[in-house]
Length: 304
Image 1 (cartoon, rainbow, N blue to C red):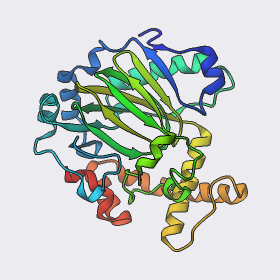
Image 2: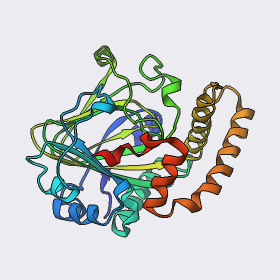
Image 3: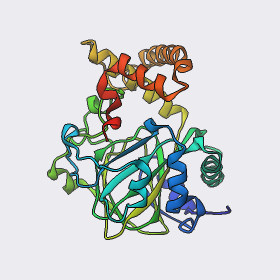
């Protein structure tokens, strides 16, 4: 795969990685994104790496009232034109073919963004398979992201990251016990930028820019090519510790206000993560560990 992404060097220099922008690509006929190949992929993934629900949701969807789909994973993909579902297959980098795709795609970005770009690590891929007229509720993602539209029409409503009237610093804190969905009001739409995407279109979504997504008249396939830079990893470690300390009754300042304290929190997080990581090798152990540390809500996606 050569020059799969259509990137404008001037746009990269002026907007990447701090502001969203549209891109093009030549990946719509790629063999990795046909429905039969996605069924094969899903069958080989651990269940905690697949999440799917009814597409009949709202941007302000209550997590407790999210409608489900009464189909197994492979049938949901096979019947995506009729079953009105929304699905994400997470961490597709565990499949060698998809891993190569992700690394090759981001190599292009690294080459064009220049020597001053931060290193990319923790490269991950998330494939979305959605029926027509389905909605992904309002949320934020704790990584950098190129969202590539493979099939169908998608409308991404994006909001300014620095606007704390949209998402508060508390809501940006990271914890497995917190549901992905964020509180949303129709009043937010006055501040939205809507990116319209069809086959051959894509979007760069910076770290933690709030957004919600709706599909058009056809079923959709998209892939989010994501990564983390050293600064993003630092922010995530601090926000994870802030969430834990808040839960213990000790609300914390936002990252960046006290750099020395941020370094202490980051170090504590890395020590804890290093101790836990060997216990996360299997799906069963991950599920049990999440429940012990964060409660049943941390495994909410098993309810689909």
